[in-house]
Image (cartoon, rainbow, N blue to C red; front, side):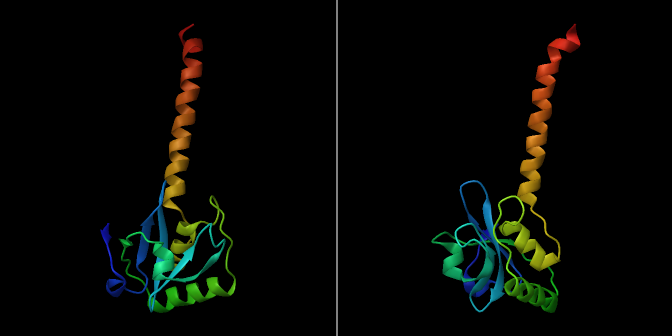
Length: 134
């Protein structure tokens, strides 16, 4: 992921700024504005490039091949009825993927969920190992 300047961004680009445990995501909506959902503001909205970046370099996460009008309509629908921020159910990644692809999805949540499942299985095997030897 390369650092991108506002004048290089294209409508529908998935953008990211580094946070302690993840890359905060948003969607470039044109005219220096980013569609975003975060815990500080508490809901989806359009925010300036600077508000989105919060002093961090903005990275181009993905430049999807999008239908401009579909993404524009999804952003408008989200602004008309903004979803509140919920870390496991309605986070920045859910919101970005919903307006780009029309599906609520969080790759980060899926990754952490998969890691948690693996950790739980490992703990279960460690607990069962002595019983299996007997």
